[in-house]
Image (cartoon, rainbow, N blue to C red; front, side):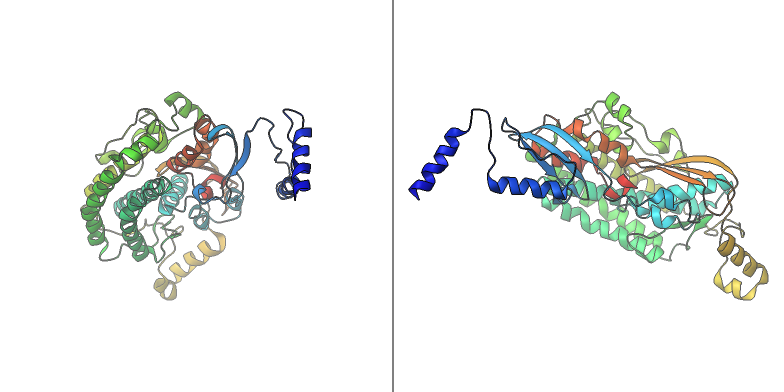
Length: 433
């Protein structure tokens, strides 16, 4: 034993100053990492700094997100982001799917608030076709959109609290999110990926208790929102962990392509619902919350206030849902009821043509954007008059946020990197497309 210790000490003495000699176990670990991650450097840094991976399987990344960090103690000196793990070729699939079929892809982009993705796509297609849907359809779409915005922000703010050790706020809000899920389930038969709309209208008419259920949520949610405000906003620990962390200026945010709550937190009052109104957003009253320094705390405050504004919008709409059909009178686009297909030759022909030949959109190029929960969600469609688009491109808000992540975390603490990622609300499915 003494000989072994002496030999070990001699090995240490023989190492020249400033040179590190890895152990056999370290060399094996390095070879293993290189075989698992070709092209990634895992060399030991001679000055005591460390290279570590934040993700892709770290629980705090909330998705398949990988970041290569160089840390000096607890301080992040360099960061490199990697994307592509959840890439599902949605834009390429759009060239082969029909316009209603593509909803199965929009469902799975931002899977936290799927109806908003569906509505954005449907509005783009209806814009190309020149369809004007009944007022009832538009009002219901707006109500579901704002409920989905609340549902998305509940996840974002709840997870931010969990990552900073405040688990109670997550539980306070999450049971209200379940109420929204139940409304969607009664409406569409599905909870998460509900393919909410159809070109020309809604998949189904609203169920009998729809207004009652929405009113119950609007009445009871403010209490939960106030409790969350007490738990987090006024918590000294939460404030110290978030205020001034991950700041970004308005100029840099615009250069990166920020939109949505992350841009508004940096002090830019841009909202697609106001600056480029769609549906009936120019006929309802709501405010645009704006932050100051674009930090984690301001991003949190903006999303909290946006939930209050969504409640305002829903309150103005839920008592004023017009009577009428749940789809436009476009038999060559919207499928007829199954009972009419069995009894009417004309409806049978329309059903056959839509199923076999699809919806033929006039040739041209079209871009349409909506204010999704994470920001401007845009769809570019290039049509050549066939049943499927010739090209599809999606402007995914998270893609632009994630580019700025290295700049936001550089110079900060390792623990702050988690808070910054949570506050950006990066959804892996939307990021990769």
